[in-house]
Image 1: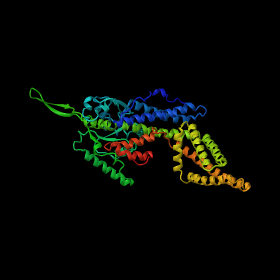
Image 2: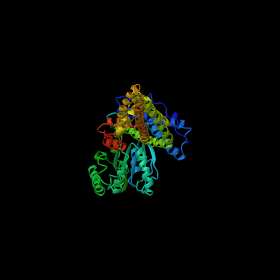
Image 3: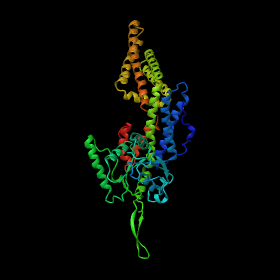
Image 4: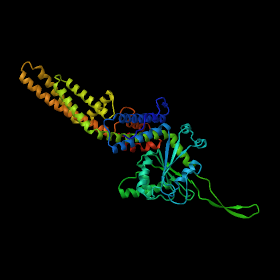
Length: 496
């Protein structure tokens, strides 16, 4: 078995309780609890699954998902916000990051493709950078910010770079997309691709010193024109309209081009020197810090929880596949148990109660088989959900079973009057009721497998529950609020 993350890597967080007056802190805390619950659950399963070793390829896939859960939890423990920077070559991505950092950390140059691989740098904003935050500036005092520089999206080996971009975008909490000059169709398409990550995006127009006539409104109109052309080709509406507005467009000059200036010497002579104009980056700094102050920890919580939800879905699917034979045998065993128990019980209603108890026992047995044990209360809630969502199959079993049970009880009560005919009636009703009970038990068993395969979320701290709660509580002024419906649709949740 491949090594898995150990529980001792992550210290207990029970004593770290966020104040109800700090909704972002509550979101982050609940995400930590949900992540820890998921990681503990699957780690426990793998430690106990000695008699059911998985195939090597399946182990590797599951190990990758377990690692993803561990990394996401570690990020939340450290409360690290990740800001990823994308763009085509020669747009000044590295220069923008150097300007934010206030020093040249990343290499820049006139040649295309200076950045060959993603690079991560920690940015600690100075008190001066944070001074403009009039509301809750303390929320960023101890929040590490990780800046991620990426290679140009239009360089050689585009498929590999596109896959890398999607991976980084999914892990990021905020995306910066750097452009300069006229926005091209390639850039618009890259923006649409990044939008699929459902993260806030800032469009950073760099080199404003070379394009002094540009304005946020003009840039936005340029995007709208590209959107209209794209819609005409595809027949679909603009996919960026909800995500980008003029408020998410920022103008900067990260590395202004030197200007030649005339300098008068003391003796009256005129000489010409090259002078670098001041960097124009304060607007971008303020925008990033404002977003992270207002919604940064909620963004981190949602980002981690979405990763958990997706990883859990894949892990559960693999578990269902690995235990398919055992689960099928277990389901059929309970089908027989339920059919026999219902058929032999002569008292109406009590036979249905016995059948329900058999279903609950099967739910718990299947959950334990998959390493996802549930309490009796959770099993009961799940059973009710299955009954209500199964339509006519289960409701027919209950209704017909009740009628047959009453007939069976009546036959048993009159067995002393005409034993042969009553026995025949009893046997017929019992067989019919047992058949219905067997069909119902098999339906419940298959429903449990589907539930597990789609990525279950046990209890109030499950990823699905916490994500929906956070989406309902988002401040209407945040960028995340604008994309919450799309995130809801992507995850298959009810409308918020």
